[in-house]
Image 1 (cartoon, rainbow, N blue to C red):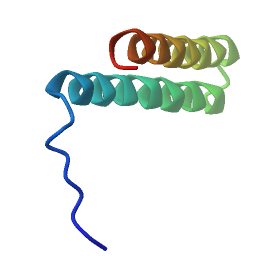
Image 2 (cartoon, helix red, strand yellow):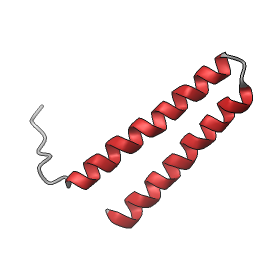
Image 3 (cartoon, rainbow, N blue to C red):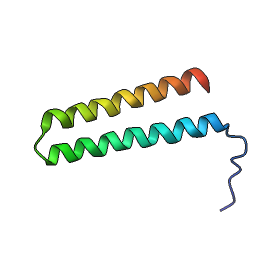
Image 4 (cartoon, rainbow, N blue to C red):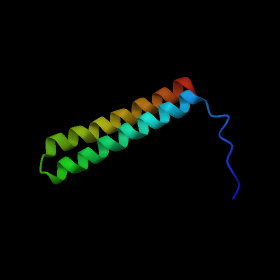
Length: 66
């Protein structure tokens, strides 16, 4: 394996990816937690929030970086 050169990645892209990855996976984990707590409505709302966040992330990537 060789070292990967990430110097060409813009800082904005890195920050956007980090923030949205944290947001999406934290909403997913909260959804799973609420499902285990038998709070199904809140769990599905967290799942929906993570899907909406993923779509917004895709749209922002498509508009700004692709």
